[in-house]
Image 1 (cartoon, rainbow, N blue to C red):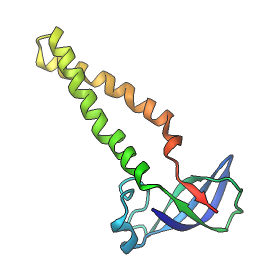
Image 2: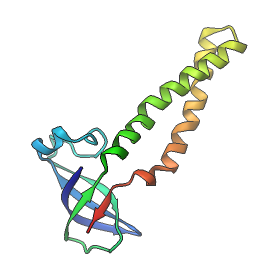
Image 3: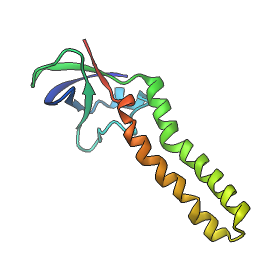
Image 4: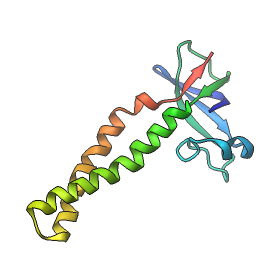
Length: 129
């Protein structure tokens, strides 16, 4: 997915890019669930990496590779379900209480999400020249 936006702010090696809502483009995009643009607000923003520093107010093109969007969706939604299932199965093998096993199965999921956030830079959109 590629979209044009305006640079609003620069922090370190990332730029805050304001993107506007375009119904035709957004309905086709695989990253629409987590891009930050809400149809009722007409615009949103993403933090994007850059190689050449843009200036504030400059129009740039932001790219989110579709393969990365699909991988991120899998890591955010499918993997935690699998982790929870494995955690429940393992806990239930040692503890026969279903309720306690279900509660203990949450522990690995609660550990997983902060780790995912720590590595979220791998999925940051980038500004293409």
